[in-house]
Amino acid sequence: MRFRPSDRSVRVPVGTTLLEAAHRAELPVARACGARGLCGRCGMRVLAGAAGLEPEGAIETRAKQRNRVDPAERLSCQVTPTGDVLVTARYW
Image (cartoon, rainbow, N blue to C red; front, side):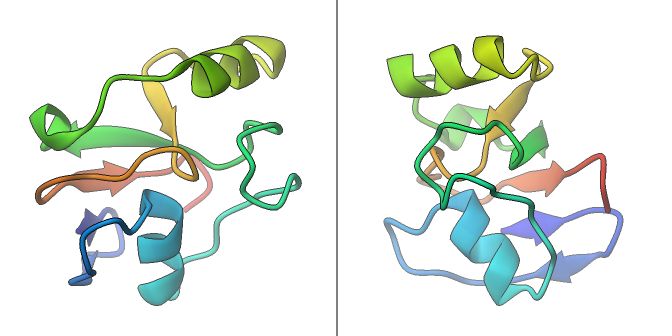
């Protein structure tokens, strides 16, 4: 997984969320709910590799609506990529 604008990259095992990967890359990610998909603070924009992501689930959709998260962002605690992705966050 790759992160912009920091240009950091990490290799992670299958099943790792974007949130976990960002922490391994030593990037800060807000998460007031403890990564349970409730707060919407961990939103990230996928710049490349979106085809390797599962579709947005009901928990993520509800949290994004409730917390006014940009529909183009994904909640990193709810996304487990199956391939290489490039992401950014508004707070980096």
